[in-house]
Length: 182
Image 1 (cartoon, rainbow, N blue to C red):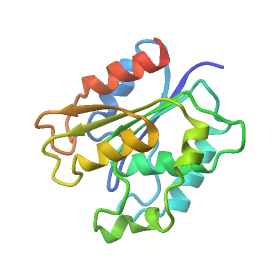
Image 2: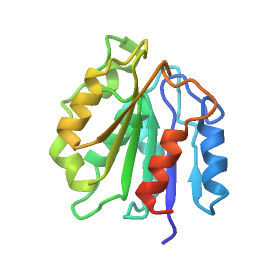
Image 3: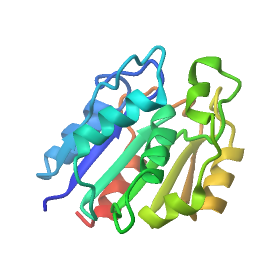
Image 4: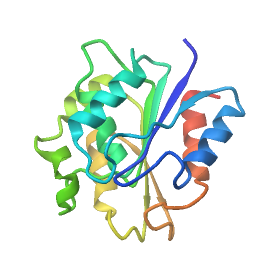
């Protein structure tokens, strides 16, 4: 199977926002298949809808399947991993501005109605990277510590990147390329 990368936007996101088009282009230049789906109802997201869309898009996940999520896209990846069948394992996941609770935002609370099952997530993926900013107005650095502790994620703290609503994100590209050995 060829390597496949799925890039997941966050709340109110689109495939054309932030660094997603740039990352897709840079990976496709190396012959890597990249999908950047529009997840349903991005303004008022529901976990079940996002997971159904992702499941349909991915089909069978395997060691050649990789994910990179931004903000709410990160917990979507975690919830997806929780739902994989025994023996299914992906190649790796990169979380950009990832978090582990609803941040006090009602519109995304549907993704946090149950506890995160860290054991299940670790069963289905062994390689995690967490990228955070030291001045993210929504996501504090404590979440990077949690991802490091619970998932043994390799953490990168970026100076003054806010919530990563930027056109390019070189650390994400570099870490993905290392992860997939491209």
